[in-house]
Image 1 (cartoon, rainbow, N blue to C red):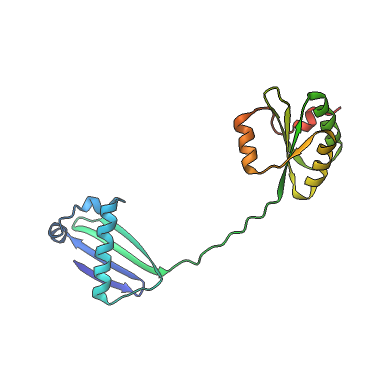
Image 2 (image 1 turned 90 degrees about the vertical axis):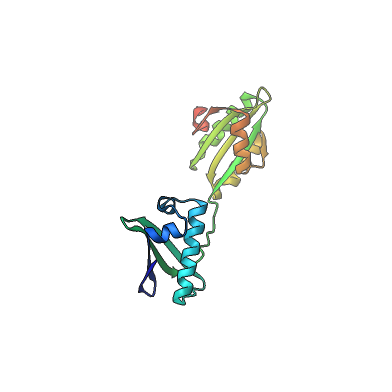
Length: 185
């Protein structure tokens, strides 16, 4: 086993055929990503770093292995661990869901909603003869206006992402995209 310390952050380990036979390793297994190959590579890298006196704390190790005509070459790169990324999801859209018992009330509400010039995407679902659900996806600042109009004609229902998934699974979607404009006068 030959160890070349190229720099403070890079080490090259060369395992010749004799080394591989002594360790009872198949060189083809070392280049595939499996549990045994990663365990063997981890052990080889740990032994090598111990021999060199390197003890990286909170460092990120990148290990690559390549077959050569003489055996296997393992490249180890020592780097700083990447900083943790934090993501904040800001919900800028609002779901407004209305329930209507019959089609005539739904059409009246849709015509009234169409007079608003707010940007929205709307879908109409049939509740298996029990009524209709009108789902409106709009910008957050317009949600209260849509809820007010829906409450005049039908019943506003609390809505979340899970509710939208359930609507798509349980009910037939009659109009997808812009259901409100379908009932425009």
